[in-house]
Structures are given as C-alpha cells and as structure tokens.
Image (cartoon, rainbow, N blue to C red; front, top):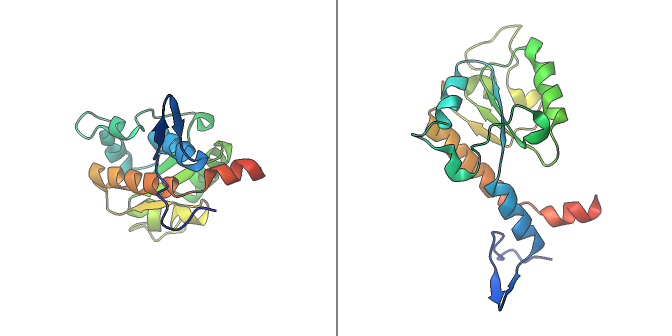
Length: 169
C-alpha cells in the first residue's frame, strides 16, 4: 500500500541502464501526457474551445492537441455549450462509446448548470447524464480557463490508482 506522503507523479531512480518506478506512477504519467479530447461543441463555447487549439494558447504543451472526432480514440470529452434534451441522448451515446478510462470536462455555464436557459428544452447541467470531472465557469469561458481545467484534470489523473484497476479487471 502506498503511504499518504508518497509522490504519485513519475518519479524514478536510475540504476545503471534500469529505471525503477511504480506502475501507477508510470501509467498515470503516460495518461496525463497524452490526453486526447473529444470536442462536443454544442454552442458558443465551442469557439473558445477552438481557440485553445490555436497557436496562441497551444494545447499541445499539455499533450492534448490531438482532437479526436471518433469516440473510440478519445479519452476526455469536453462538453462546451448548451445541452438540449434532444442532444442529450447523442452526447450520452458518444460518451458510452469512449474507451475506459475516460473523463469529462463541462465547459461554460450552460454545460455546467444550463446557464441562462431555464426552459423545457435545456438540460440543467450535463452532470445529469454524465459524470463530470472538472467544471469550467464562464459565459463563455476564456481559453485560459479551459487550459486550467485540463491541468486540474491531469492532477486528478496523477492521483488515480491505475495499476490496481488493471489487476482487478
């Protein structure tokens, strides 16, 4: 069992040509360094999501520049914008098609809480149909806020016990 003070990031000791580390640390280091987003741009927040991929904000610094439009190749769903009840089943279906492990970022006020729309047609938060890991506030949120959310998600993934999941699966 890992003690509470143990560092869960990639921390190795080199002995000759052999690198010694924990499986959890290596697997989580790989996962955090290669998160591939599945963009679910449903409304105006999608413009800010596109801006994050541009050179000014450079999502590539965090290993997440490969936007995948196939759910089987993505592991982070970024729901940006207003989720209507009509679209909710499609969002859930795409989430279900993603391979494990998978994470969700709710980007913007509409994806997080329904925003200013209190109507029969708008889902009052994507967390009613998906397990959300990180919320990004704003209407629309700045690209820096999405980068901050990605960093927070990477920190969360670093703390997950990944090797024990593989052994029990």
